[in-house]
Amino acid sequence: MEQRIGIIKSNNATVWGWSERRQMERGDSLTPKHVSEVIGPTMIVSKQNDLRELKEIWRGWNLSTKQTFQHQFVDIALLLEVQNDVHLYRALAQFWNPGYNCFTFGKVDMTPTIEEYTLLLNCPKFKEGKVYIRPKEAPTFLKNLTDITGMSAEWFQGKITEKRKSASISWVHIRTLINLFPNAPKKELLFALCIYGLVLFPKVLGHLDYGVVDLFSKLQKGINPAPAILAETFH
Image (cartoon, rainbow, N blue to C red; front, side):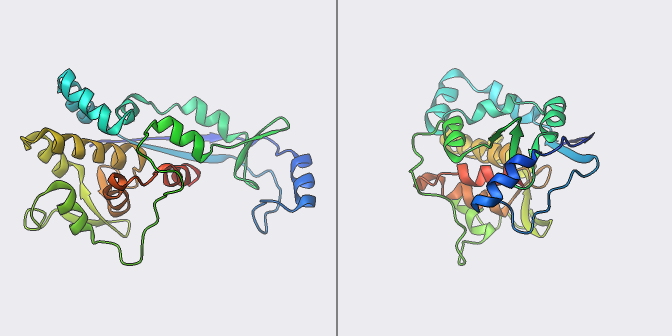
């Protein structure tokens, strides 16, 4: 997968002093030790995986397969068509309030919420209040991969690498399984895994890392991924 990177520099707008003074007096969620100041230009590095091959796989499926996939994973395939809008990023950067991790438009503070993200994902299988937390004794990366794919540990030998201090696997290997699996449900499962790894949580371009694979392994239990996606947005 090719890497596309855009670097945007924008001047920050003045953060509304009234908001911070008022809310500091009331003792709310102001970031500890935050000092209000208008800093210099903000640099935003926008990275996105090249999704053309994933789109080709989706377009190559017949209507019946797409309908089955949507029944299982609802609207996540629509994320393949979402484009990075550099002009939107430039505008939003000017209204970001670092003291409260929210956008301040005039005298209105706005921030995305878990409820909104859950609605956007449109998945009725998510259980309210059941969120993803990585346990201390979590399964290994290899165990999660073998459980999800049904392949043997030997098949993954030499395919797991370490990227940014996390176990990862190139999407190329998962693509191979998608193209070779005769089992339609397994194809759909792996395709959904790729959307989570390359679109929602693209930690390392062209790779799926341990975190997203572990989260995905728990989706069948009704885990709501919206809080994790929201945290990634703020990050």
